Image 1 (cartoon, rainbow, N blue to C red):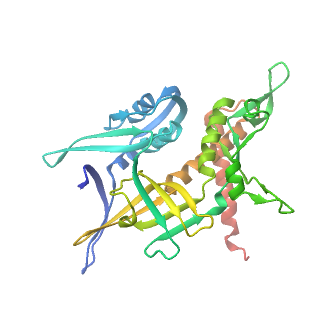
Image 2 (image 1 turned 135 degrees about the horizontal axis):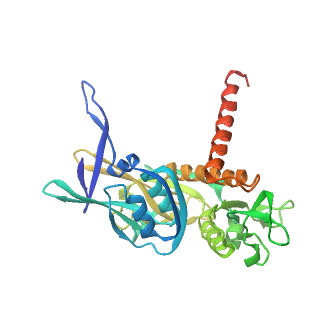
Image 3 (image 1 turned 45 degrees about the horizontal axis):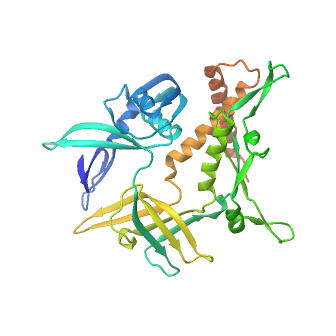
Length: 354
Protein backbone atom coordinates (compact mmCIF):
# COMPACT_ATOMS: atom_id res chain seq x y z
CA UNK A 1 0.00 0.00 0.00
CA UNK A 2 1.58 3.27 -1.19
CA UNK A 3 0.48 6.66 0.03
CA UNK A 4 1.72 10.19 0.02
CA UNK A 5 2.64 11.85 3.32
CA UNK A 6 3.29 15.45 2.34
CA UNK A 7 6.34 15.24 0.11
CA UNK A 8 7.28 11.75 1.27
CA UNK A 9 6.16 8.36 -0.03
CA UNK A 10 5.20 5.74 2.56
CA UNK A 11 4.89 2.01 1.92
CA UNK A 12 2.93 -0.31 4.19
CA UNK A 13 1.96 -3.96 3.98
CA UNK A 14 -1.56 -4.99 4.98
CA UNK A 15 -1.41 -7.61 7.73
CA UNK A 16 -5.08 -7.76 8.77
CA UNK A 17 -8.52 -6.51 7.79
CA UNK A 18 -11.72 -6.31 9.84
CA UNK A 19 -14.75 -6.39 7.54
CA UNK A 20 -18.11 -6.09 9.34
CA UNK A 21 -21.33 -6.67 7.38
CA UNK A 22 -22.21 -3.04 7.95
CA UNK A 23 -20.04 -0.03 8.55
CA UNK A 24 -16.46 0.78 7.71
CA UNK A 25 -13.76 -1.78 7.00
CA UNK A 26 -10.63 -1.47 9.15
CA UNK A 27 -7.24 -2.19 7.60
CA UNK A 28 -4.13 -2.83 9.71
CA UNK A 29 -0.79 -2.35 7.97
CA UNK A 30 2.86 -2.20 9.03
CA UNK A 31 5.85 -0.50 7.46
CA UNK A 32 7.44 -2.44 4.63
CA UNK A 33 10.65 -2.16 6.64
CA UNK A 34 9.26 -5.00 8.77
CA UNK A 35 10.16 -7.42 5.97
CA UNK A 36 13.63 -7.35 7.54
CA UNK A 37 12.17 -9.66 10.18
CA UNK A 38 12.51 -12.41 7.57
CA UNK A 39 16.24 -11.81 6.95
CA UNK A 40 18.66 -13.47 9.33
CA UNK A 41 22.14 -12.72 10.62
CA UNK A 42 23.99 -15.68 12.09
CA UNK A 43 26.97 -13.97 13.70
CA UNK A 44 28.78 -10.70 13.08
CA UNK A 45 31.43 -9.08 15.26
CA UNK A 46 31.56 -5.37 14.49
CA UNK A 47 34.73 -3.87 15.94
CA UNK A 48 35.73 -0.22 15.48
CA UNK A 49 33.36 0.18 12.55
CA UNK A 50 31.77 3.33 11.20
CA UNK A 51 28.01 3.56 11.07
CA UNK A 52 28.06 3.10 7.29
CA UNK A 53 30.18 -0.05 7.60
CA UNK A 54 27.84 -1.46 10.24
CA UNK A 55 24.80 -0.71 8.10
CA UNK A 56 26.41 -2.44 5.12
CA UNK A 57 26.82 -5.62 7.19
CA UNK A 58 23.26 -5.53 8.52
CA UNK A 59 21.63 -4.77 5.16
CA UNK A 60 23.72 -7.24 3.15
CA UNK A 61 21.09 -10.05 3.24
CA UNK A 62 18.24 -7.62 2.46
CA UNK A 63 17.08 -5.73 -0.62
CA UNK A 64 17.51 -2.38 1.16
CA UNK A 65 20.71 -0.45 0.29
CA UNK A 66 21.99 2.63 2.14
CA UNK A 67 20.50 5.88 0.84
CA UNK A 68 22.63 8.12 3.06
CA UNK A 69 24.43 8.11 6.39
CA UNK A 70 25.47 11.26 8.26
CA UNK A 71 26.40 9.62 11.58
CA UNK A 72 30.11 9.89 12.37
CA UNK A 73 32.38 8.06 14.78
CA UNK A 74 33.27 4.41 15.30
CA UNK A 75 31.78 1.84 17.65
CA UNK A 76 31.21 -1.88 17.86
CA UNK A 77 28.79 -4.62 18.86
CA UNK A 78 28.10 -8.32 18.38
CA UNK A 79 25.11 -9.49 16.33
CA UNK A 80 24.38 -13.12 17.15
CA UNK A 81 21.43 -15.11 15.80
CA UNK A 82 19.14 -12.12 15.21
CA UNK A 83 16.88 -10.93 12.42
CA UNK A 84 17.94 -8.00 10.28
CA UNK A 85 15.38 -5.60 11.76
CA UNK A 86 16.62 -6.24 15.28
CA UNK A 87 20.19 -5.80 14.03
CA UNK A 88 19.27 -2.52 12.33
CA UNK A 89 17.76 -1.20 15.55
CA UNK A 90 20.82 -2.36 17.46
CA UNK A 91 23.07 -0.41 15.09
CA UNK A 92 20.86 2.65 15.58
CA UNK A 93 21.23 2.30 19.33
CA UNK A 94 25.00 1.71 19.41
CA UNK A 95 25.92 4.33 16.80
CA UNK A 96 23.35 6.78 18.22
CA UNK A 97 21.35 7.40 15.07
CA UNK A 98 17.80 7.13 13.78
CA UNK A 99 16.49 5.14 10.81
CA UNK A 100 14.18 6.36 8.07
CA UNK A 101 12.98 4.28 5.10
CA UNK A 102 13.28 6.02 1.72
CA UNK A 103 10.74 4.97 -0.92
CA UNK A 104 10.84 6.20 -4.51
CA UNK A 105 7.89 5.69 -6.83
CA UNK A 106 7.77 5.66 -10.63
CA UNK A 107 4.58 5.17 -12.66
CA UNK A 108 2.63 4.17 -9.58
CA UNK A 109 5.06 1.42 -8.54
CA UNK A 110 7.93 1.26 -6.08
CA UNK A 111 11.16 1.95 -7.96
CA UNK A 112 13.53 1.58 -5.01
CA UNK A 113 13.72 1.08 -1.27
CA UNK A 114 16.63 2.31 0.84
CA UNK A 115 17.66 3.27 4.39
CA UNK A 116 18.56 6.77 5.49
CA UNK A 117 20.57 6.85 8.72
CA UNK A 118 20.58 10.22 10.47
CA UNK A 119 21.84 11.54 13.77
CA UNK A 120 18.27 12.71 14.42
CA UNK A 121 15.04 12.63 12.45
CA UNK A 122 13.18 15.89 12.12
CA UNK A 123 14.56 19.34 12.85
CA UNK A 124 13.92 22.60 14.67
CA UNK A 125 11.27 24.55 12.75
CA UNK A 126 10.24 26.97 15.47
CA UNK A 127 7.29 24.88 16.68
CA UNK A 128 5.91 25.93 20.06
CA UNK A 129 3.23 24.61 22.38
CA UNK A 130 1.80 26.21 25.53
CA UNK A 131 -0.15 24.06 27.99
CA UNK A 132 -2.58 25.84 30.35
CA UNK A 133 -4.64 24.76 33.33
CA UNK A 134 -8.00 24.72 31.52
CA UNK A 135 -6.88 23.48 28.13
CA UNK A 136 -9.43 21.23 26.42
CA UNK A 137 -8.64 18.43 24.00
CA UNK A 138 -5.19 17.74 25.42
CA UNK A 139 -4.02 14.73 27.39
CA UNK A 140 -0.88 15.09 29.49
CA UNK A 141 1.00 12.10 30.91
CA UNK A 142 3.68 12.76 33.54
CA UNK A 143 6.18 10.38 35.12
CA UNK A 144 7.85 12.71 37.62
CA UNK A 145 9.29 9.87 39.65
CA UNK A 146 11.68 9.10 36.81
CA UNK A 147 13.57 12.40 37.19
CA UNK A 148 17.17 11.90 38.35
CA UNK A 149 19.46 14.84 39.10
CA UNK A 150 22.61 12.70 39.23
CA UNK A 151 23.68 9.48 37.55
CA UNK A 152 26.16 6.75 38.28
CA UNK A 153 27.62 5.37 35.07
CA UNK A 154 28.83 1.80 34.64
CA UNK A 155 30.57 0.21 31.69
CA UNK A 156 31.72 -3.24 30.66
CA UNK A 157 32.55 -5.91 33.18
CA UNK A 158 36.28 -5.94 33.99
CA UNK A 159 38.18 -9.04 35.07
CA UNK A 160 39.66 -8.95 38.57
CA UNK A 161 43.45 -9.29 38.38
CA UNK A 162 46.22 -9.61 40.93
CA UNK A 163 49.03 -7.11 41.45
CA UNK A 164 50.92 -8.62 38.51
CA UNK A 165 47.99 -8.21 36.14
CA UNK A 166 47.08 -11.90 36.11
CA UNK A 167 43.40 -12.77 36.00
CA UNK A 168 42.29 -14.28 39.29
CA UNK A 169 38.90 -15.57 38.15
CA UNK A 170 35.63 -15.16 39.95
CA UNK A 171 33.71 -11.90 40.12
CA UNK A 172 33.97 -9.15 37.51
CA UNK A 173 33.44 -5.54 38.56
CA UNK A 174 32.03 -3.01 36.12
CA UNK A 175 34.02 -0.14 34.67
CA UNK A 176 33.56 3.26 36.34
CA UNK A 177 34.90 6.72 35.44
CA UNK A 178 36.10 8.00 38.82
CA UNK A 179 39.72 8.07 37.66
CA UNK A 180 38.88 10.73 35.06
CA UNK A 181 36.27 12.55 37.18
CA UNK A 182 38.13 13.54 40.33
CA UNK A 183 37.55 10.21 42.04
CA UNK A 184 33.75 10.49 41.82
CA UNK A 185 31.81 7.80 39.97
CA UNK A 186 28.73 9.95 39.31
CA UNK A 187 27.82 13.19 37.56
CA UNK A 188 25.12 15.63 38.63
CA UNK A 189 23.24 18.74 37.57
CA UNK A 190 23.12 21.39 40.31
CA UNK A 191 20.33 23.40 38.70
CA UNK A 192 18.20 20.27 38.43
CA UNK A 193 18.97 19.40 42.07
CA UNK A 194 17.41 22.67 43.23
CA UNK A 195 14.22 21.93 41.29
CA UNK A 196 13.86 18.14 41.39
CA UNK A 197 16.06 17.10 44.30
CA UNK A 198 14.76 15.58 47.55
CA UNK A 199 14.78 17.47 50.85
CA UNK A 200 17.30 16.27 53.40
CA UNK A 201 16.22 15.05 56.85
CA UNK A 202 15.80 18.52 58.41
CA UNK A 203 14.53 20.15 55.18
CA UNK A 204 17.34 22.68 55.04
CA UNK A 205 18.64 21.75 51.60
CA UNK A 206 17.84 19.62 48.61
CA UNK A 207 19.99 16.60 47.81
CA UNK A 208 20.50 14.73 44.57
CA UNK A 209 18.09 12.08 43.37
CA UNK A 210 20.39 9.35 42.05
CA UNK A 211 19.91 6.98 39.16
CA UNK A 212 22.22 4.76 37.19
CA UNK A 213 22.94 3.88 33.58
CA UNK A 214 24.90 0.95 32.20
CA UNK A 215 26.77 0.88 28.91
CA UNK A 216 27.77 -2.77 28.85
CA UNK A 217 30.04 -2.46 25.82
CA UNK A 218 31.98 0.64 26.90
CA UNK A 219 35.51 -0.15 28.10
CA UNK A 220 37.00 3.37 28.19
CA UNK A 221 36.51 5.57 31.31
CA UNK A 222 36.59 8.86 29.37
CA UNK A 223 33.96 7.66 26.90
CA UNK A 224 31.88 6.25 29.75
CA UNK A 225 31.95 9.69 31.42
CA UNK A 226 30.83 11.35 28.18
CA UNK A 227 28.00 8.83 27.69
CA UNK A 228 26.80 9.31 31.26
CA UNK A 229 26.80 13.09 30.92
CA UNK A 230 24.77 12.75 27.75
CA UNK A 231 22.28 10.48 29.51
CA UNK A 232 22.01 13.00 32.36
CA UNK A 233 20.64 15.63 29.96
CA UNK A 234 17.53 13.48 29.47
CA UNK A 235 17.39 12.22 33.06
CA UNK A 236 16.95 15.71 34.58
CA UNK A 237 13.81 16.41 32.56
CA UNK A 238 10.42 15.10 33.69
CA UNK A 239 9.18 12.31 31.46
CA UNK A 240 6.08 13.97 30.09
CA UNK A 241 4.05 13.72 26.90
CA UNK A 242 1.18 15.78 25.49
CA UNK A 243 -1.38 14.39 23.05
CA UNK A 244 -2.89 17.34 21.19
CA UNK A 245 -4.54 18.45 17.97
CA UNK A 246 -1.88 19.63 15.55
CA UNK A 247 -3.73 22.97 15.36
CA UNK A 248 -2.56 23.69 18.93
CA UNK A 249 1.03 23.93 17.71
CA UNK A 250 2.32 27.37 16.83
CA UNK A 251 4.66 27.44 13.87
CA UNK A 252 3.13 25.37 11.07
CA UNK A 253 3.32 21.76 9.93
CA UNK A 254 5.23 19.15 11.89
CA UNK A 255 6.81 15.81 11.11
CA UNK A 256 8.07 12.90 13.18
CA UNK A 257 11.16 13.84 15.14
CA UNK A 258 10.67 17.60 14.89
CA UNK A 259 11.60 19.55 18.01
CA UNK A 260 8.97 21.52 19.92
CA UNK A 261 9.47 24.18 22.61
CA UNK A 262 6.97 23.45 25.40
CA UNK A 263 5.81 25.85 28.10
CA UNK A 264 3.63 24.19 30.76
CA UNK A 265 2.11 27.07 32.73
CA UNK A 266 -0.03 24.75 34.86
CA UNK A 267 3.03 23.99 36.99
CA UNK A 268 4.65 26.28 39.56
CA UNK A 269 7.26 27.19 38.60
CA UNK A 270 6.25 26.68 34.99
CA UNK A 271 8.02 24.01 33.00
CA UNK A 272 10.04 24.99 29.96
CA UNK A 273 10.97 21.85 28.06
CA UNK A 274 12.32 20.78 24.71
CA UNK A 275 10.29 17.88 23.35
CA UNK A 276 9.95 16.02 20.06
CA UNK A 277 7.08 14.82 17.92
CA UNK A 278 7.02 11.08 18.64
CA UNK A 279 3.66 10.09 17.15
CA UNK A 280 1.13 11.30 14.58
CA UNK A 281 -2.41 9.97 14.16
CA UNK A 282 -4.44 11.14 11.18
CA UNK A 283 -8.15 10.53 10.69
CA UNK A 284 -9.27 10.69 7.06
CA UNK A 285 -12.83 11.81 6.32
CA UNK A 286 -14.34 14.90 4.76
CA UNK A 287 -11.26 16.58 6.19
CA UNK A 288 -8.01 15.21 7.61
CA UNK A 289 -7.80 15.54 11.39
CA UNK A 290 -4.30 15.15 12.79
CA UNK A 291 -3.34 14.58 16.42
CA UNK A 292 0.25 14.41 17.55
CA UNK A 293 2.06 13.25 20.65
CA UNK A 294 4.98 15.38 21.73
CA UNK A 295 7.18 14.27 24.57
CA UNK A 296 10.54 14.30 26.30
CA UNK A 297 10.74 10.52 25.96
CA UNK A 298 10.55 8.36 22.86
CA UNK A 299 7.89 5.73 22.22
CA UNK A 300 8.57 2.91 24.62
CA UNK A 301 8.18 -0.25 22.56
CA UNK A 302 11.77 -0.64 21.40
CA UNK A 303 13.14 1.28 24.38
CA UNK A 304 11.76 -1.39 26.70
CA UNK A 305 13.19 -4.13 24.51
CA UNK A 306 16.59 -2.45 24.47
CA UNK A 307 16.53 -2.07 28.25
CA UNK A 308 15.69 -5.76 28.65
CA UNK A 309 18.49 -6.67 26.23
CA UNK A 310 20.92 -4.55 28.26
CA UNK A 311 19.84 -6.31 31.47
CA UNK A 312 20.40 -9.71 29.84
CA UNK A 313 23.80 -8.54 28.57
CA UNK A 314 24.74 -7.43 32.08
CA UNK A 315 23.61 -10.79 33.47
CA UNK A 316 25.68 -12.47 30.79
CA UNK A 317 28.75 -10.55 32.02
CA UNK A 318 28.11 -11.79 35.55
CA UNK A 319 27.73 -15.39 34.36
CA UNK A 320 30.95 -15.18 32.35
CA UNK A 321 32.70 -13.97 35.48
CA UNK A 322 32.09 -17.22 37.35
CA UNK A 323 35.33 -18.70 36.06
CA UNK A 324 36.35 -16.25 33.34
CA UNK A 325 36.45 -18.97 30.71
CA UNK A 326 32.88 -19.35 29.49
CA UNK A 327 32.33 -18.73 25.79
CA UNK A 328 29.72 -16.31 24.52
CA UNK A 329 27.51 -19.18 23.37
CA UNK A 330 27.81 -20.97 26.72
CA UNK A 331 27.04 -17.86 28.74
CA UNK A 332 24.01 -17.15 26.57
CA UNK A 333 22.74 -20.66 27.27
CA UNK A 334 23.20 -20.15 31.01
CA UNK A 335 21.37 -16.81 30.86
CA UNK A 336 18.49 -18.37 28.90
CA UNK A 337 18.28 -21.20 31.42
CA UNK A 338 18.24 -18.74 34.33
CA UNK A 339 15.49 -16.63 32.76
CA UNK A 340 13.41 -19.73 31.92
CA UNK A 341 13.71 -20.99 35.49
CA UNK A 342 12.61 -17.61 36.85
CA UNK A 343 9.55 -17.62 34.59
CA UNK A 344 8.69 -21.17 35.65
CA UNK A 345 8.91 -20.10 39.30
CA UNK A 346 6.43 -17.31 38.59
CA UNK A 347 4.06 -19.77 36.91
CA UNK A 348 4.06 -21.89 40.07
CA UNK A 349 2.51 -18.96 41.96
CA UNK A 350 -0.69 -19.17 39.90
CA UNK A 351 -2.45 -21.48 42.34
CA UNK A 352 -1.60 -19.46 45.46
CA UNK A 353 -3.89 -16.95 47.17
CA UNK A 354 -2.63 -13.48 48.08
